Image (spheres, rainbow, N blue to C red):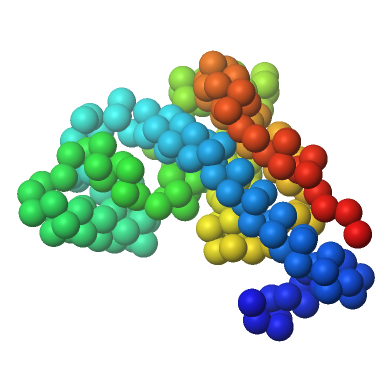
Length: 204
């Protein structure tokens, strides 16, 4: 590992080289453990955000001009790029589910912003987030989803997460999943070994 990367762990280890190496290995294990709840969280989130899009624009919403019409330019361009990329890769027109899965998480989180409130969330959020606490605003849901996205990106880019309150992040992720489906939250909680890996933090 580069000296710059190692210095982060060396600082956490207060200059103890061997302890820094153990912390680095623990970070890898913890990041790996997070992959399961992140997988469940991302799939659950994009599917539930897509619900009002299906309701308003139909099963072929990726090609629906009405949907394209509500998108800001960079979101419309991203959608068009994804459709083109999937078509080239598959050598056939992709299905709606394939386009949905290929769109990046930041596209889905952006659908929760105020820009799309009147287009997608005029009747509220209860159909997509049926277990959200009473009086929770769309902005609160968006911020929770965006926080999840940013933490997920840290793991995807192999950042140090051991000093990023991993227990809190795990609880917030499970809570977000729980806003969507209580059964899925239970299932994810049963499968996730993040708490166990947190409990194996190496000692100096």
